[in-house]
Image (tube, rainbow, N blue to C red):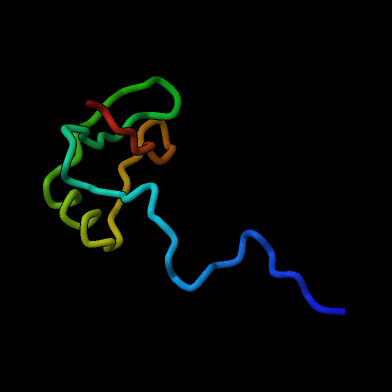
Length: 73
C-alpha cells in the first residue's frame, strides 16, 4: 500500500500567503476595557512598546478583574 499525500500537507514551500499581519499600517488602537462595566482606559506608551516587542506587561484591574484589551479605530 502506498501512502497518499494529504491535501493539507505543505507542498515544496510554494504556498501563497493569503494574510500577512501588520501592526502599524492601520489607525486601529488598542485600549483596556473593563469586563463588567465597559470602562475604557488608554494604554500608556510604555506598555504599547512592550506589546510591540512581545515583552510581559501588567494589565490593570477594574472591579478586581483584569481589564481586557480591545482594538478601536
